[in-house]
Length: 155
Image 1 (cartoon, rainbow, N blue to C red):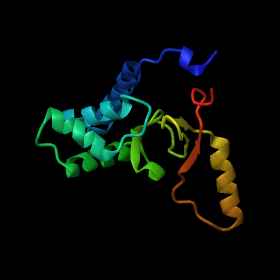
Image 2 (tube, helix red, strand yellow; image 1 turned 180 degrees about the vertical axis):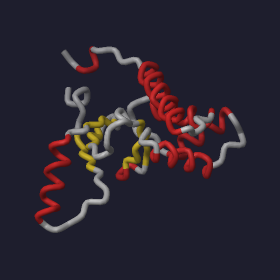
Image 3 (spheres, rainbow, N blue to C red; image 1 turned 90 degrees about the horizontal axis):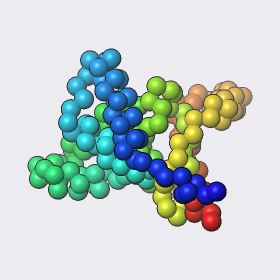
Image 4 (tube, helix red, strand yellow; image 1 turned 135 degrees about the vertical axis):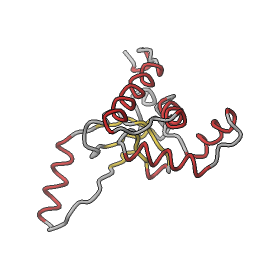
């Protein structure tokens, strides 16, 4: 059975992400503004990384006053709260599956359909940490991006 044989409802992803974001903002006493909510919804509308200017384009269709600086500030906010990740190699953003966990995740990026899958395999982080310690190196940030073909595109 192919992965594509299992229907996926992005609305479920959006609802879960918004629920997590609302809870986190309430816990930290931070406003989860309609703009922040809308940008998070756009990040979760598919499992492809979204470029800031694509988000801006969508927002401008809804509100002509949307500006690039507003989108970038909102994306920065979502990253600070660990609700989103920046995929450096694509210069784009994805919603975070596990905002309550550390952000030492690995991203599997399909070169064909451009979907991004997040994996938070602690053994990968541990191996990098141990290797860095042997070299007397302090890891400040870890972003592992793996490019290849997803299950659907392998067929």
